[in-house]
Image: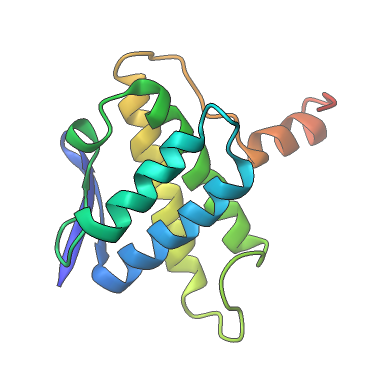
Length: 143
């Protein structure tokens, strides 16, 4: 069975196993990076993961995440998750067949949340690990 993470006419499609893994990994990244203010977003996602998401039920960003501050948080988390998979700091890496697809799904979900934020704030961009590294290397800006 498949599910989708959607915002308006855009979506990322996953099977249920991929969706569960994506959300579990996102929660792990979120727990390790959330500020005190953002901790409620993590708890909310944990609660949704335990009872709200079911096979075939993905995420409808407009309905499930109406708060723009929470959308910003999850955009950053999913982008940082794609980086963590790439860096092999999350997940089991005995086999690598799953990584490229998981990176795509995490990054695509980050883009969906970013798009959802930009619906209200067109010039907003997530403050991600990759953005910091880009600034250090290309723009030669310190953290």
